[in-house]
Amino acid sequence: MSRSYAQRAKRFKDKQYGSRQMVFNEEIVKLRLMPLWLLRPHESIDLKILDNLMKSIKTDGLLKKAIVVDQRTHIILDGHHRVKALEFIDCSRVPCLLIDYSSPQIVVFSWSEDKQLPKNLVIRAGLSGELLPPKTSKHMLRVNGHMVHISAIEPEVNMPLALLRTEQLSSSY
Image (cartoon, rainbow, N blue to C red; front, side, top):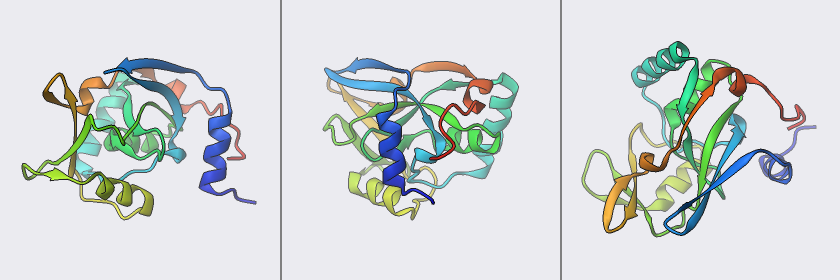
């Protein structure tokens, strides 16, 4: 019998997996290796970007940076193309930086226009599966009075693809 997403996610959270905690502006963020099936995209991908990224990842034989994910909903905030590339090259896991998306330090802007977007637009797209066009949202962080792209806090992981292909999670998810 197939389990619901909520049941599988709870079971994943209950297990002990390696994680690392970091402090970002007095808030704790966690770096965790997570299964791809647990993640929820909110944007479509650009096939040309995906193709170039897949070639780069295959050539390097590793994933250089973690992706950013909301810790509560598992919506991907930054790293859609990396996730899709890993999926296409038969990986089952990805290093994720889990953050609190409700934090006022996180602000969403449009890539195409210089205007702020509501976070609930991202959440609704991620939870419903009705994806936004590629590069719709630009997640920014307020750091010491300045705005920086969320990728600035993505740690370098340089994780070999063999480790991302190894399925250590139970197949009953």
